[in-house]
Image 1: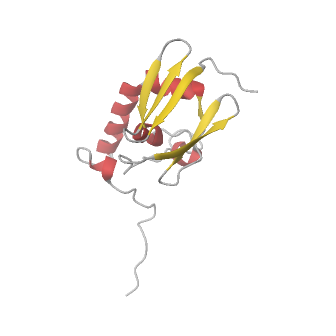
Image 2: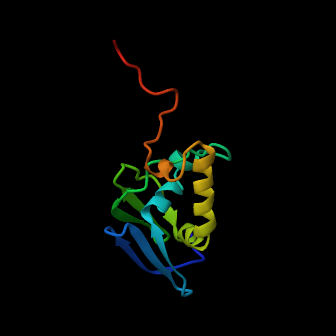
Image 3: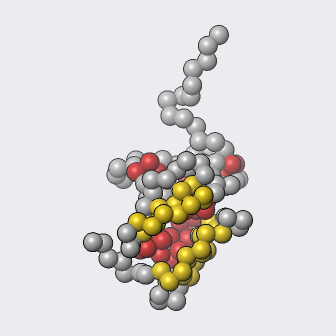
Length: 138
């Protein structure tokens, strides 16, 4: 059984404003935008299987959450409307995302800029497939 240092006392998915509001027993509370949660998904699809294997997420500005499933008593699994549903967000990870939101968001925007996206364009751009895209028949 996994134990968490941080226990939530409330969790509210706000679909119109696209934020997950979460409050913890220590009095901390955070509003985590869906886009932020999606680009920092703890899934292997996003994080890879080790350092340097992360996949930069783009085009997630308007991502929604269609549902949230509990995972035991220690986590949730959001169901994103772009089909992503493999991230398991522990209470400790959600707390970390809340505590470090400003610096993590700045790091994400920096990575978009380093990847050649101007301004907020990477937040709207569809993710480019690896390997040069799809073939076209003539």
